[in-house]
Length: 544
Ligand code: NA7
Image 1 (tube, rainbow, N blue to C red):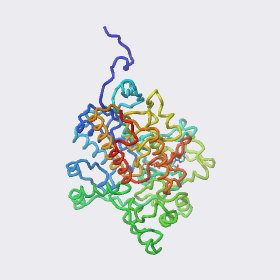
Image 2 (image 1 turned 45 degrees about the horizontal axis):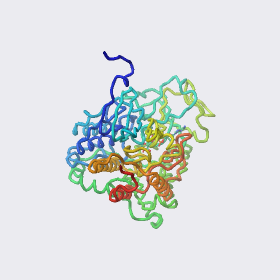
Image 3 (image 1 turned 180 degrees about the vertical axis):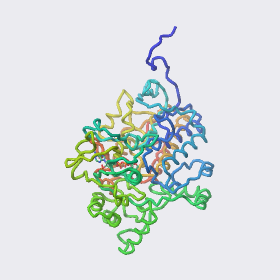
Image 4 (image 1 turned 60 degrees about the vertical axis):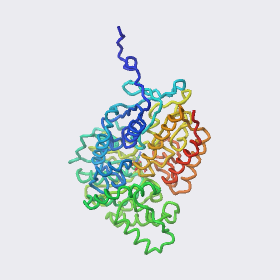
């Protein structure tokens, strides 16, 4: 007779696998396919959501749209797949990206190896067995030789701890945990906190439906029109015919985009001509604006010319001078924070049902049962939208209890900021790989490009270990030291750290160590470094 107990961990033996992938977004799907279909491993993916999509599964807020152009925002590992899929818009919206990822998952029969509604709570390395023991929220256990986190960079929602939120009589939502059934803003007084990429996308859509939208702005932000349009059939055909060339460009550019950064310098271009170039870039729309001049992200003087242009644009669009002044009072270099692109964001402030509240000079003090309160006033609301971002990059890793050799906790190893080698491995955590985590180009790159490079590298590495009869790969502590220094050094040569409040630095989360997290040396250089490491026999790693 077996003992019956209510603890599933006691009744269910651990599922034994070669590899376990955490997350079924862009990264997890491709990693699963690589390990299962190319290497023939027994693999499972655990996913907290009820479906594939990762970041796109959760971020269903109004106006959610990608800021990479669709012809660069997809997998490129399969020419057939690229021929079979057609994007409908210049920038894919959340729903279309979800259709795409479901299409891919079905096309490669991935869902049968994904366990949905399964949140990983802990992953502990057992050195004697050389295995990762993984537990889930429901108490299930898995054991795998290789553990790959594909948990995304922007998947841990940040809801600021405003006193009184629990007393609010209306409804509140974080954009990154948006209800699947949507939110009806009709006749509602809506308050939105946050003016990052998300708030800038959401504001025009909410304003079009709500009785009134009050935007609470702490840091004014640049934004350039996205110029989103439905794609014409001849462009769609062009993409099908030139998919390989487009792929080659995305692998050859600093940030994995399908456009090149101009070689001309803003500081060597006469002001009238520079103005024309910015004007044309503004008309064309999108992140290409950032590619107008080579020196834009390296020289503050050059950057100032772009910043000045956008600030003038804001003041020319927004009719109320006080609102225009608040929106254009931007304290950081252009694109030192993630630069948003928008559809009629600044124009939205010309609507009679939209108002802007400056919560930099008078911060939000608390939430009352009626709405949002600053030191000066109470703003009565029916709905509060938190477009307040994420505990980015490290948050998704640190919310799991990950322990390496000798039970050492990742929370302790990363207490002063993320420390790893190539962004791929952490010393003391053998056979644990991280896709697009801190220390890699990740969020500074068009994500699918960064993801494919990482998943391919990890798959090749595991194939190498198996071919050589090796059991383990682990970053050397001194490689971590050097890489952390390199990541800092490279960032310090750009204007990126000048945005003191950016989530790249962890500065949006109270108490989080201020460390510039992504690798800012560009995707091309990063790929070279990773390839050189392999060519030198996995230099900097211990293989055993
Ligand atoms: P972001 O870019 O982190 O923006 C969050 C916004 O919320 C930003 O304007 C913040 O102001 C604001 N915020 C955060 N906490 C507060 C408090 N306590 N009070 C007032 N305002 C606050 O997140 P997004 O979701 O917009 O974008 C994340 C990424 O998704 C984006 O970069 C793209 O890569 C896609 P702050 O600037 O910190 O003063």
